[in-house]
Image 1 (cartoon, rainbow, N blue to C red):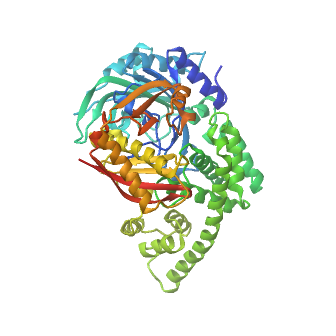
Image 2 (cartoon, rainbow, N blue to C red):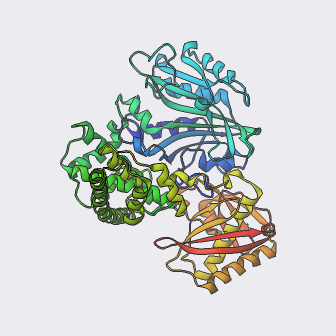
Image 3 (spheres, rainbow, N blue to C red):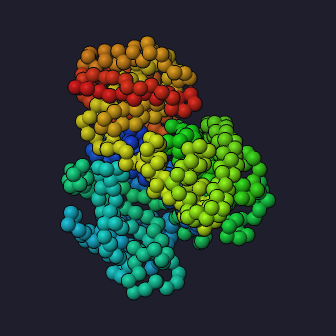
Length: 600
């Protein structure tokens, strides 16, 4: 029987692959650890990059999971029938184990067998990589689909832009993929209609990635010694197809959320296009915000990086809430519904429920003050344009003043201007933004040259240094110190930790001395695999244990550090050379940040 709820679909998927020898692993954080090339976990592969590159996973070579993901490149599109910023990705993985034959046959079985999704084979289409100068055409995938009984005219060879995946950052594992589509009712858009069209006739439901290569910094592709399989099936979209809904927002996942919005606003979802869009934006943005704040590496609103995205989501939800006449404090009320709905799957939401509601209310209050003042200033700009017959555009100077002086986000300026039929000089705004050393989410990826995902020698050494830094901080400041996140480029490390005040110069100097002492001791770095209880009993630190698998890796550096970690690490502490703290500053409320470098 086809699953009708998200719980049924998650359970069926995991059970299917468990029956095929896969170990079920938990979702990783939505905040990538030690990978500055991306702000969020956008696919199931991100947390597994070290293992896709050859590191041994404690759970084995066949894995399956449901990964929390965030993609924010299409925030402005949210409100239509399908766009979401948060979604769950069902995935199965082969780490140098099985390859195309097994992956494709299992995909076919899960999609078409009456015991599982039971989809009509004649309503399915498939695409495979057409090949180019760097990589050959994937005839093997084509032939495997044909052997399943797929008709020739239901298989499409498409170019790299359609059928190639990765790497997640600038370098890393990548390869051709084969994608699976639902063929919707109605006629195709024309004789050349294919899954590459945007006409909507084909709806992607699943993706099997065959990681055969590693992309190097120079753009070349090097074959992997042990090819891997990485798959992804979007839970929300699949549920939409299975239940015959026209929109992901019409599935049971959003029923209680939309119901709460209706209760608070007094408006009816679906009553008209504008109201429907507002409901969807609020539902999506509040769901994503709830998961961001409630994550084990929880984000709080700020003006840079993940915090900037969070602030933008909350404030955009509030603005649409104002259009619906939502009462003050509505964000926390909607979040409570989301926590209740997802808490049994992601218990961190329940554990952090007070924090989630508190941060939402605080940001809503901050924005309420900002938006009133910003809209007043925007109205003044409109008046001056009319009064003095100025060019009918919001120029970069005015747009930046709204942001810099009044805290009014550029996205809000663009939306307000659009309502009045005016363009905004966004490009000029971004130039002014960069000049003031502010980093918007659009520039966040570009400002890094690489990260731990690259597994370069330097980033590996810097990652090792974060462990020694963590240990030294706990010795100097006390055991209240705990890791909140880290970010590594080829040039420096950045380490966030819980601590309630600014460090003194003496404390900073002592931490630096202790790290250098550990480096000079040149102790070997050892790795053991054990269960989480065994790791904790051995004295290993681990701050995200709710998201670990059954078995973990514990890295020990003499008496200086013992932590649960996925790696990679240097073999001896002496390889780090030397350690220097460049800066100690606030990251967010109750969280401090250290930036440091290592030398030869």
